[in-house]
Length: 182
Image (cartoon, rainbow, N blue to C red; front, side, top):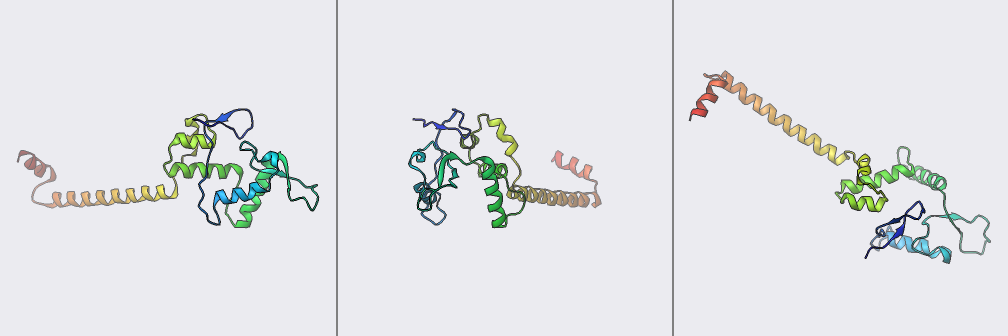
């Protein structure tokens, strides 16, 4: 059975499946952290299709344990939070909502996760639109460099052999003709 989950735009469109995370029971376990995060959410926002990030309730009473509003946190606020968190973590470069999205999609594709799964998770409707996320990762670049290095060594070896052939008593063409006759 296909579960339908509202898309991230909240525009009434639905994804064909509901993304899931598996518990690892470690300090960085996504399931444990989410359950802790969800326990502080208002009851009306504890539904599976509710927005994940909620706006902060700046006018709450000091004794009120719920510090979220029922409204989703805006993308500009998420961007500010993300930029500040990346700076505090010492991450290089300009970290934005889109750069994190692109990194996640690229890493999934580098891990050879089927493209249709990546599209379902990211909300892309067209598999062709994922082509712009395909880049050569550091690992792929190392493999390509290694491949070029091996090819260069083979070419160098072949050139040395052909030099030996040419400096012998017969030319390369003559030896090739003799070998084809035998």
